[in-house]
Length: 296
Image 1 (cartoon, rainbow, N blue to C red):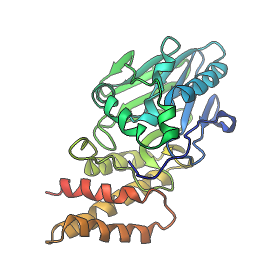
Image 2: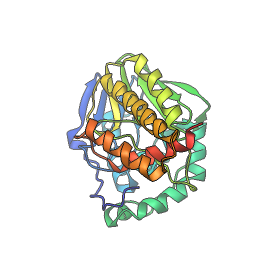
Image 3: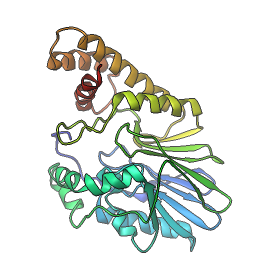
């Protein structure tokens, strides 16, 4: 992760915004380690997408969801296993049915404890939020795809395969034409590459690009990124274009005798010139490292 000290990643439900009938997003307000959180309603059930970081944030989200549900059955899903998205799921135990794809369930079990310790090193506010957290076990696990009937509204959960993580999933609401992408997409930010060899090398720039091309072809009306402002299909196209240019600029240099460090420096300069207003520039070099490893 970034070496900088993070601000307190608190979820605030007061800014919740309606995207469609019976469908709201709790925005991250561009605060680091706060995800965009979805609450999707049907006639008899409500689905929450992502929890926020830690017990207190998840309790805030659960209270909001329970009030929103007004007695309807609660479900919880998470876009991937990373702490700000999934490390509050334990709070929903006994209150909601927690379901994810099989690869993400394995990530939670195998890699969750290591990520918990790594995130605690990001500073006191983050460590405090993670006190008492334990990676939760899902109640229901599906393999590649699952259609969740909320009552008059079906939500599609689709595992993408390796991309930003091994267990990414996309959540779409067809009748509202809304797509929740998790960290496959960020708005106004360079793609987050959790490339930490030898500890974690599951991210794949090549596979991520292929996933983004498939998602962009769907052209949903509303795209809810993992972090940053809610947008439209342009967000998907922008991420695909960035990943493609990152791959091309990296691989062109990888074909020469240039060192990986020099490649990273040169590619970073190119990307900053193309996207001077984007945040998260520390992730460019991680992406270069990943793509160097994937170069044939």
